[in-house]
Image 1 (cartoon, rainbow, N blue to C red):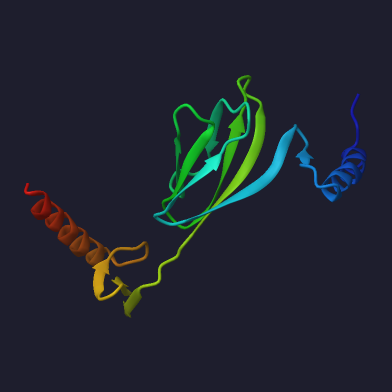
Image 2 (image 1 turned 30 degrees about the horizontal axis):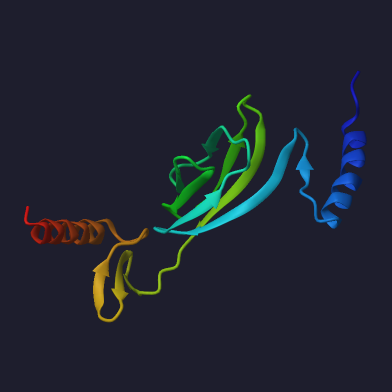
Length: 159
């Protein structure tokens, strides 16, 4: 027996609106909890609670963010890796989706950006302007600055 989509939607929407108005969590078809949003800054980490009964997590795009599960807890660390948006699915032990969360990674750079034609350089100016690297910097500048950082790290560690 097939049910027309219009009938499913017309039956679902009033219940969803009523639940939302009552402050309850809204479920989308399939039993997955409606998407919340995790907001994290690029190159920053945040700790978040996973839904109860989470057995597996799936990250849509690992280029945008990274997930690290904390041992002996139902928590995870979300680290912003590049600008963008992806999703995170939580599955129970049977493989059923129990929640979907949107992960948004945005910038928070408060330094100086120097643009020379197509070449871009970033500087952290707290308190003096020093070279730093950010997504969008030119390849030449990234290579030179990363080389300086690596060289400084080896000098300061005595290696």
